[in-house]
Image (cartoon, rainbow, N blue to C red; front, side, top):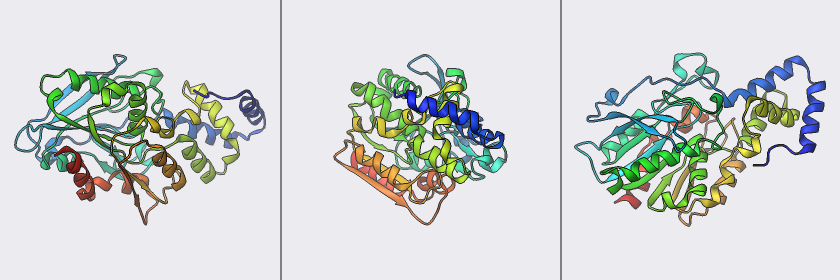
Length: 322
């Protein structure tokens, strides 16, 4: 971990002494993205008539209990499993921005992951999906702070160990669907425990961020872009990590399986060259980056892309899973 250099820490202290109260409030609010309100389970597989699904509790690698759903393929359990994880500040159901504050402060859109499970089960895949620590109904850990992968990789490892030790799931072909926070965490898990993921056939990896670019983008929108060092200090004061320690690019070189990634080109949360950087660092020989055009809305149009247009993802999975 890079933490904060002495030079950056000194600059942060200087900024702390000169910043206005109003701008400091903006800096603190921006840093607080790592301690967001939990999204709630506003929809279940029953909403789309999926049958045979049930609740699970899976231990993370450090013991944090992770609430999960197992949803068998339509018509009965198949030999193909997709392990699906979510983004910050979401849960396995998706994101309830359409229910108003506090979620609408991020975006007022509904993100529906359950329809995405429906696409997968209709295509013959079993789905295992779960809430990360400090999200949805899963256990609290690390003082409720997200490490954007620095702790959550343990959840990815715990879920994969559960699959590998299960009498039926362990015999299935496995693909990953690892997005945003889940993508960063998955890359870290692969880096730390490559042996666990050697049998994974492919990975869908939407909207994987690097938090330096996210904080730069949002601080610019709020007129506080000169305070990156102070943002790092506030992140540390919350008990988290500086921006440079929270990003997919850190562990992308460990990823070698085929990858389908997509990003929103004009995403107000980041910048296209940042998504491109992470994609370029993936060690996968077979990889593709799809750009979603004509929108700036990461939430509404990025996370819902598979739900609305499933053909690309299903074609990718079919190529490696059948």
